Length: 270
Image 1 (cartoon, rainbow, N blue to C red):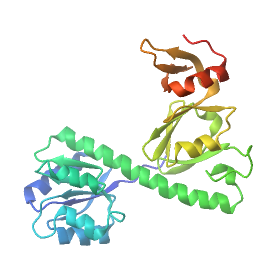
Image 2 (image 1 turned 90 degrees about the vertical axis):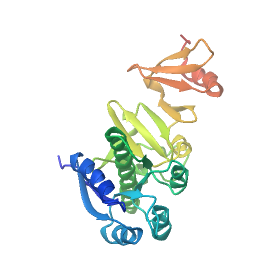
Image 3 (image 1 turned 60 degrees about the horizontal axis):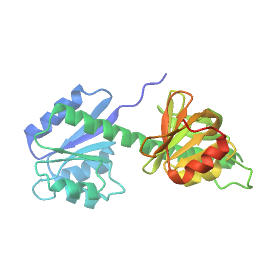
């Protein structure tokens, strides 16, 4: 199997010791490649535009052009995935307003850095998923195979049979019959199929409309389940509802959907 490409990282901080700390931590991390460093905001703008890193660790407080100024000059839509580094807690809220994936509050522990790096790596992967899905959907549509993409059905019975996803740098087509359940994760959806989890950028409403209602049922605003995977309906002591799947997974059922689900399954609550 082809190894996953290294994460291309840019480190920006006006303090040499702070830059070196990040470089040491990145050197110890797997699958990362530091493509450059910058000590000023102006250098950071030039490096982001010329080096096109996947991820930038960006100091907030720098003389002249600050980290926030760097984002404004480059443009939030053109910025790589960004982790802000700051010595002041109040800057964190402004960082998140500018779509930073995380921030590190100086001085930070090694484990806190690793947590931020994991989040950033996930965000980079999801961006790649979007790009690959867009390219694949265009290709599939050009070949008159709309069933593999999440386009509008041509009839009420034109339901998805396969969903195109990206995983470890490869585009795969997942048969919907493999999917046990789907969970919303912000703007993304996680397709759970046995031990595999695939991530796509799609709204739950679109998925609900495109999946065969004879096979799938939306049990919660954030969850769709394949009906034949449900083993039992459960009622908690506080009146909460859930389903137990054949593999033991428990999923919450909203109260407004419980009765309809019970009727569809013909199962007694346990």
